[in-house]
Image 1 (tube, rainbow, N blue to C red):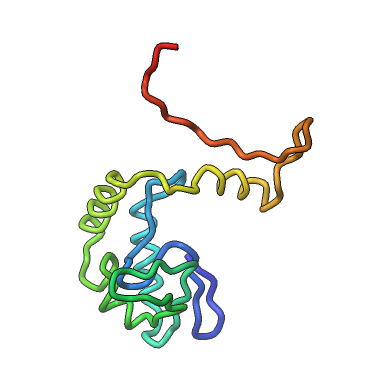
Image 2: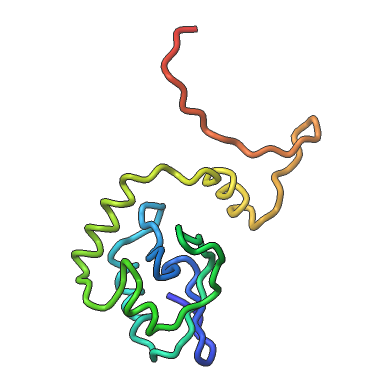
Length: 142
C-alpha cells in the first residue's frame, strides 16, 4: 500500500530501508501475507521509482538516515522482500522474528495519542493530562 505521485511512492511503514527490511506484522490488524503482497506490488513498479519510507532506523554501519531508495535497490537489497523470496518463506520468517520481539517501548503512550489524532488527553480534576502505562509486576503478597 502506498501513495504514488509521478515516479515516487510513499509507503509509510510497510517497507523500510533495504538493510532493515519490512515492518512488524504482530500489531493489531497486521498480516504477514498482506505485507508480502503489498511489498511485491510496490516492487513491481518501474525500477527508477523512488520509495519513500515512513521512518528509517539506521543499522550498524550506517550512521545516517536515508529518505528513499529506488525500486531496483529494494528488489536486489531488501533483506526481507528482495526478488526471489517466496510468500511462505517471508511469512514464516516475519512471524518467527516478530514473536521474539518485545512491545516497542513507547507503544502504549503512542497508541493513546494516535487514537486522539495527536490531541492531548483531557485534563483530570487536578488539571493534569495523563497517559496510562500497563505495569507488569512480579506476584507479590501485600
